[in-house]
Amino acid sequence: MKPQTLQMPPAATGLQAVAGASIGSSVDRSSAIFMPKTLNRRNLKKLTLDAPSSSAAPAGIDLRDPDRKASADELISHLQNLELGLEYQITMRVEDLVTLKKLGAGNSGTVSKVLHIPSKKIMARKVIHIETKELIHSQIIRELRIMHECDSPFIIDFFGAFIDQGDVVICMEYVDCSSLDKNLRMTGPFPEVILKQVAWCVLSGLNYLYDHHRIIHRDVKPSNVLLDSKGGMKLCDFGVSRELINSIADTFVGTSTYMSPERIQGGVYSVKGDVWSLGLMLVELATGKFPFGDNSNRAPDSILDLLQRIVNEHPPSLKPEDGFSADLCDFVDMCLKREKERGDPHKLMLHPFLQGCETPEFKSEVKRWAKNVRRAQKGKAIK
Image 1 (spheres, one colour):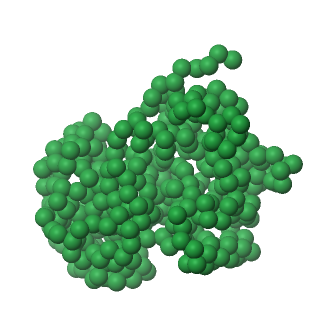
Image 2 (cartoon, rainbow, N blue to C red):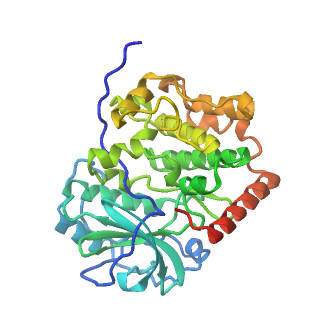
Image 3 (tube, rainbow, N blue to C red):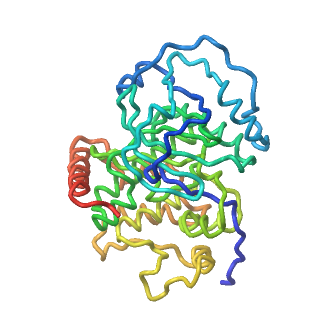
C-alpha cells in the first residue's frame, strides 16, 4: 500500500485538569462568571450559595459565531458583566482560594489543588494565560458557558470562573485519585473489570457531550480521564484546552499520538475520532504501554514517523492468547477500525463487553480497586 501523505491538523491540548501549579495571591482585577444552575444540585456538593442577582444578561460577544474574534479588553469586560439569569450563584474570587498543592503545568497555564474558603470546598483551579491569544478569547467564553451547562456524572464538574491579571481562572471539581495515566505508571496494567469501567464511563461522557451539547471531545487520552476513590471516572479538557495553540512540539508529542488516522490526514473530525482514541487508550491501559510507542523493536524515529505509522499500519489489537477476553478483544477491534467501519459511542454501549456495568457486583468490585489505588497513592507519591 502506498503511504499516504500527512497533513498537520489544528493544534490541540496542553493542560490536564489534575496537572498544574500554584498561583500568586495578588489581585489585579477579577470577576465571577458562569455560576451553578440550581441550589439543590450544588448543595449536594456542600457549597455556600449566595442570593441570586436580578440583573438581566447584557449584550456582549456573539457566542454563536465561531469566527468571531474578541480582544483581551472585550473578553474581560464581557466576563465582568455577564449574567446568565441563574437562580443561585457562587462568588469566586482569587482571595478566597488557598493553594494546597501544585499538581502540574503546561505552556498555556497551570492547575492547582485549592481550598475555596467560603464553601470549605476542595477544588481544582486552572489558570489559562490568554493576554496574547486574541483568536481564542471568544472560544473560551463560548466553552466556559458549555462547561457551566454540563450536568453529568461522567463530566468533570464546573464551579465558576473569573478574570485575574489578564488570565482566565477556572474552578472545577477536584478528583482525588488523579488521572489514569498517573495511575497506570503506579499500578501497571489495569485489570479487565477496570477497563470495562473506563470504556463505560468514557462512552457515557462522549454520548452526553454530543447528545446534549453537540460537542466532540477531540482529546480523549488517559491524562484526560480522572478517577475518584469510589471508582467513578470523568472526562475533562473537552473544550478550552484544545484552543490553546502552542508549538508543534508541545502539541504533537502529546495529543497527536491518540489522533485517529482520518484526523492526522486532515479529514473532517467526527465523534468516531474519539472512539479511536478510546481504543488506543484501552490497549495502553491493558498492556501498560502505548501501542505505537518506543517499547518495541520498531520504535518510531520521530513524531512524524509515529503519525505515518498510525495512518499506514494495521491498528493495534489485543489477543485472547495474551489472557484477554474475547469480548474485550472484539470491543477494541470495533474502536480501532477505519472510520467507515468503526463503531459509534451509542452502538458500542450495547457491546457484550459492557454488559453488567450497572450491576451492584460490578460497581462494588470497581470501588474496591479504586480504594486500593487511593491507599497506594497515600503511601507512594505518583510521579
